[in-house]
Image 1 (cartoon, one colour):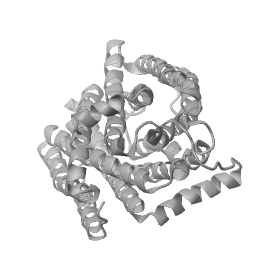
Image 2 (cartoon, rainbow, N blue to C red):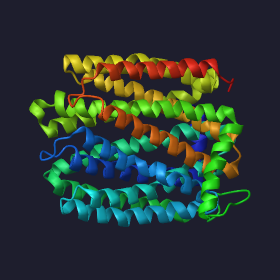
Image 3 (cartoon, rainbow, N blue to C red):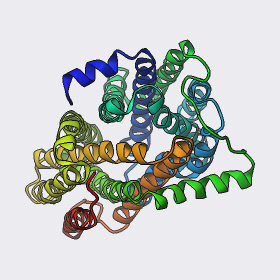
Image 4 (tube, rainbow, N blue to C red):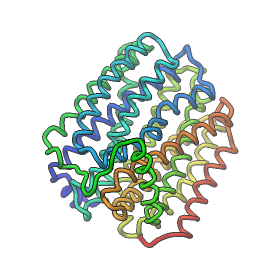
Length: 423
């Protein structure tokens, strides 16, 4: 990422406001997810099973798919600045309800429902942030902005998750610790709404014609996003590559969780397992940071597709190797390296794909396209989680999965290169 371009982006006042909202909101997301993960998967009273792992991740990510079509159509109708203000305020209120449910030690349907609601509202926020970005930076700086904002958001979420783990330990752990972390997330969502208040209502779009918000219009908007990608195969293929990567990411997440919780943890100690999983998460976040730093320059030099292919190939080698070494030598370091490699590839590919979508799809379709994009990648993540959760042993030692991950990444690189476009 060229320092001059970075400085140019950060000089834009509206961009700084949008950037602050992303960082604060995704930091709060990390706190929320940390609290829920420790409550459901890392509590001494609750031993994780395939069903609990798949269920937890389904609750965390299915709202991204269920709400996506509605978010896209409405973001192309509603003032996006207003969405970013009110959605964060609504999330803050609902997380208080989540804290009450957790405080009463309910980990069944009641918890799932309120979490689905708060994450569903969050879908509007992330889709709105992506659709708003072209309104605050010009085309020359768009790739730098695409590298900086989602990567920083991912890192903010990881930092939030790590802070959640630390806060929970400081206040004594257990379900009470999870409640304290949830209240910190509430404060984060309130803060995330404030930077938008200084922007004009129409500053973030949408532009062009608007669409209705009836049920029929929602379905039509979903179809419009799909057709827009079909009409722009450069953008469509970029989205498919991210979908495959997210499938792999979901698979590796379950493997890491099972290995740390049931194989690598010190005598099954859930606190030790949680610390190891936090280390793996940090590795993935650092990989994402490096991917964001080097991708803009390398993409300009080699092209979006060639760079995406190169980082897919490195992940196809490093990720399964790290899993094998971690599983059969009972060491955490190779798994951290695998997470770093996949985080690097994930962020680099996402930066390239986001930029290709923004460059080739008309603005008044961007909300719908990004919502469809989010639906696809998060449904793929849940699919990867579910497949591995019900096919891998509880120990996480699953050589077939490791090999399958390498094949999926390598085959995607070959196909993307074969049907490449010079972009």
